[in-house]
Image (cartoon, rainbow, N blue to C red; front, side, top):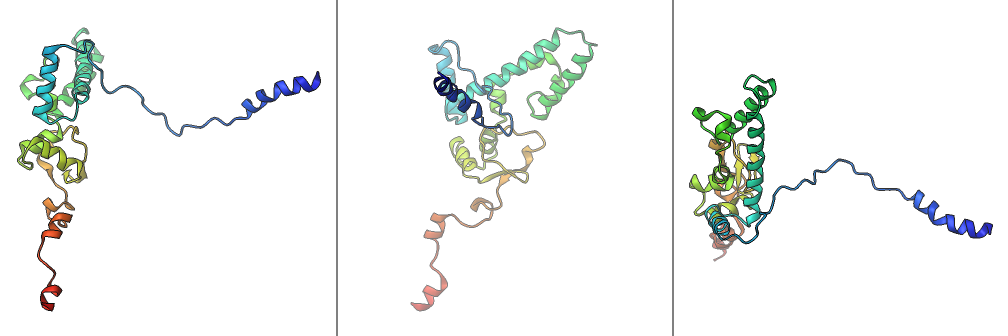
Length: 208
């Protein structure tokens, strides 16, 4: 009986001695997008397809991600509007929210009120994407070409190389969108195809 009890308790001891992996940092697993409740709604499907083509989006999840961010902004503004105008929370958080709207050029100076945050649209946020601004500035031939340039690390914002098309550009950084210094478009080394099609080296010309 003693040997039987020892055999039964052995797996428990083994389980207790297993070292669980330690997570070095806490990760945020929160969802960044929310799928629509009604999957097949003709008007919404047509509108999403139009936005995908107009702004060169990869999939509809990019629209849903923007809509979720917009819903969070509206919820914050709606909660603050329920408070009294002199409430410390509304004064502090309201000013911070409006400064953020001005920083990303989502609201003009004359509409610096919480009421106008509720009127923001998906197109407003999509217009502030780096991909859209690269195309609007004339650096790319099309909206899809702009996405390719960004993904292939040809574009920088100030001194920061950005390869994320959905990067939201601040108002003060909009004038500093340019080609990367290492990019062939920015005076860097020519690309593989350009080097292949370029003139032959001088040594080859002397041999002939």
